[in-house]
Image (cartoon, rainbow, N blue to C red; front, side):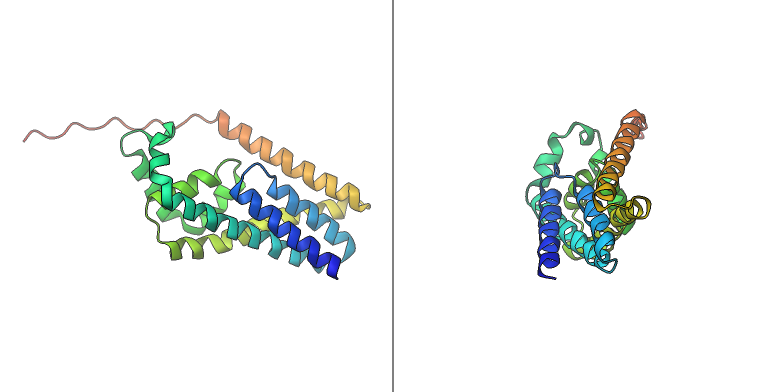
Length: 197
């Protein structure tokens, strides 16, 4: 049991670190841990979901605080936010989106940080962010754990299911990233001239 708790603590740290420094494949870590847990004790999969959700949630809180502190200066330098009223439109979408917006941003490669930035710059209250991001983090972790459990159902050996879960996550992430790059960016409507005074 001590080894399991230690592994869960490491998973939480890895996901937290990956939430702050987005080069760590956190979804693959949760999927691999869930695949391994499903081979050992299926109840442990629930603990994997919880550990992944805690790491994602705390990491998002840290990033959100950093974005609140210096996000507007950073946002003004980003090309995709420089257009007229662009930042205001993105911020309004984040305020309206709530849990769904945060969940979708976690599932799309490269989508989480822009949404966190827009939420911070828009002045989304800390409490509202903390409440909206909690179920989003839990759903994200459960989804990636489900991919790992699926690997367990298909492959009899623990190492096979862990490798399969990681490959599935990487392939899905790459496909979503490719699809996102192929979609044309929306063209903002031309500004209407001001009525004569």
